[in-house]
Length: 455
Image (cartoon, rainbow, N blue to C red; front, side, top):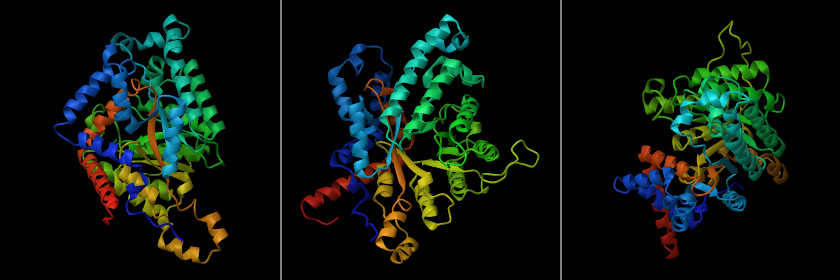
């Protein structure tokens, strides 16, 4: 029998999660509560005062750890991280996208003098390797070890510090030390069955990031397997993204590797040049949905166009692709799920993952988790199958893979990440308000249930 949805998709969440989400979205959607909250979090994220450092002030740490940290983060140590991951999987999520929260903080003088750190063999370069690249590599390797087979690990190149910033800004290959570190991370991920999401960053660095990402895809996304270890991130709000992604698809087809695609709307609206971004939100939505549909259909259509005759990329067949659809937009999620359920899409649920940030858009994530996961067409087919055949063939194919993105690290290390989430909630007022209302309805539903009142 097909699974029937519960009274509410949010019914799968523990009550503590619902109440904490309700509190967070209430603050984030309030014009009175949000500004002072942002100001306080900004101070905590950038302070040098030990009294305001959550890692040194135990009372402050205890408050943050039980509220905002618990809402968005995985834990401060491996035991806490594994407990959080296990709890998400028990709810019904397929897994997690895990990131390492620690960031390299550069002074103004260090930022202005990136070239000295990139000079091989110099004292500054050795210091960069010791204090920036090695800690970043060790933290990322530990993150890969914390992830389970099938999970994702998010990797941000600029977290490796000045050598990475210099090489990316000049569109150069990574330095020997950094290249060796990235190779070690990729090898460990491949051995453990963990997938890597190379994050997009500001447009000034993105061409360099694209070059590095394609190079590591060539090495680790082998032809014939159809499975990607390395994924690039493509931001639909950039006008250039359809052309960039089309070029990368053609390269993958010509060279015979699987292209890993994480599709997002975009995260640098405040820093990327405005003329490079879609003119309206509706344009961004249209571009996101068009790219997603073309990928799911594995077809040169809509925004994605095949290489022009005479170009370096000669292969016009669509390559193998694995896709992460990272969005909080319910309309986009439902469109993509309907396409996957219809049988029109060439990709199946095994090759597609849906992802949302931990602590945000839970009503969207839980709707995917709760189901139902079978279409009328599949139910008719199931009647003709034996129970055994159906168990073997239908369950995995008809169930979306749903992941939550979260970071781990000490409370202090996660403050900059938490501040970004707070600003993101501010900039998406309508979505945050919808989340608050969904959580409020769920609280009321549960209270009525205590008194035997139907929802």
